[in-house]
Image 1 (cartoon, rainbow, N blue to C red):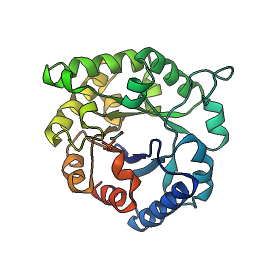
Image 2: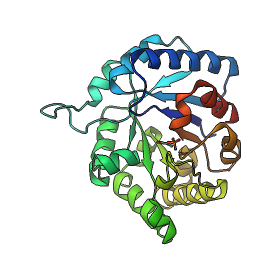
Image 3: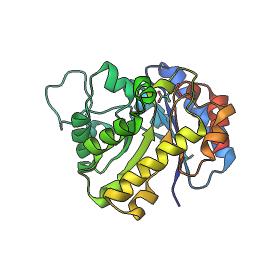
Image 4: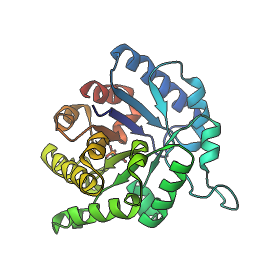
Length: 252
Ligand code: PEP
């Protein structure tokens, strides 16, 4: 049975106090839900990671990073390494978010290196991919997604896939209020699962959790999550409000 995941990407939001207060409120309300086979994840900014980790009790909220550099260490001003993350208890990192690809020129080739670093350090990646609006309009979305997945992930071994979570995030749906329909999400998730099954095996494909991201709110989460190949969500805006985030967790 695949693990369900609701992950909140806080992006460049929340100062120290806001981050600690938000995660504590999420933990308190999540504990009451007594979730089974479901992970609840938050991704604060680097500067608040340790404070958020330290403010949590034994509840089920996990803290992950929004990005990481591929190199072990060295002269990379402003960057963060896998070992730095591990040293404060972070085991998972979001990679390839469309904002990283668009504003910081992250390529699939660089992402392949980052994935290797994740695996070498026995960490886990939440790998984001998705098409822009022009690709969707010109019916090129399957090709774009196939290329992103192949370039960044298809050098992996079967066993590496245990450390990979996929997140389909159509760029036209991120922060726009426009959501992919549950059918569009299901269609793409099933396509991606079939790519993994063809390259590896059905068993590998059946185990990988595929999240949907793009304007998920408490009001549309249930319909999206009810689709067979949608295993949860990567949430931006709605993850900054405790009641909205809990509403989405309740939907899963
Ligand atoms: C995101 O940035 O990953 C995202 C899905 O944002 P939003 O939920 O705000 O569309």
